[in-house]
Image 1 (cartoon, one colour):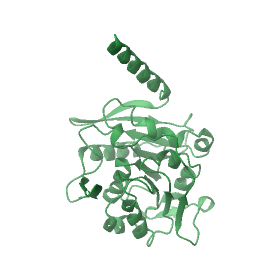
Image 2 (cartoon, rainbow, N blue to C red; image 1 turned 135 degrees about the vertical axis):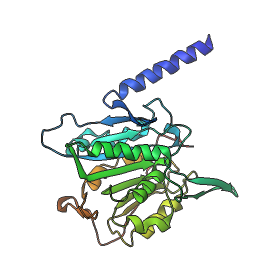
Image 3 (cartoon, rainbow, N blue to C red; image 1 turned 30 degrees about the horizontal axis):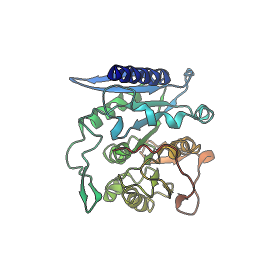
Image 4 (cartoon, one colour; image 1 turned 120 degrees about the horizontal axis):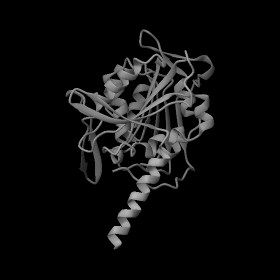
Length: 293
């Protein structure tokens, strides 16, 4: 009886989640014998003749699967403040990586109680990454998409994925946001033209913040629009604070990709200062203690 009750409760929770994300169109992208589940979010109404930015969101390890809703649990949070989104409307893609795959070929091992990462890129991209890239290409064919304003965001496994996506397909994106992710700092020369806003918790033991800080410090030397926000009292789950930042979409939309693949900064939205764009948040303590594995 108890088992049946737990099953019913689980089904009820899944139903509630499904209803919560009803505005996020459910679809599957098929290429030859491969497929990728994804959700897509559109502005309330697409104005005829208007072009909209395209945002790609890469979820973390805990959201992998084929249910086609789990990737929205954290990923939809940057759209939560409708007053902000209404000022910066976009078409948003939420691909879902299967459980057996990752967005990258990253490797990790525990040495003396700490996770040590490596980010090999000599191999081709993973199938899920390649499918997500083809999905983006497919949407870029639509007349309502502004191909000069394509942005990529991601957290944890997805944050690592963002840095690899802009390395592999650096002529596609105008700007990026990386939450609790990191990568090989020696690759930054290939995407020096892409500004990135990094967010990380100083107490992160899952993906230590040094992996994003090292990339930031290298990139900041060739891209002064790159930013870094460090949350002093947060561990891995800094996504709640990052995605509730009302300036995130405004900052992203400030960048456009030129025809020569160098981004241009829209004058009205340029947040550039003469100082390195690094911000330390000391007093934020999140309510959500969920940690991505």
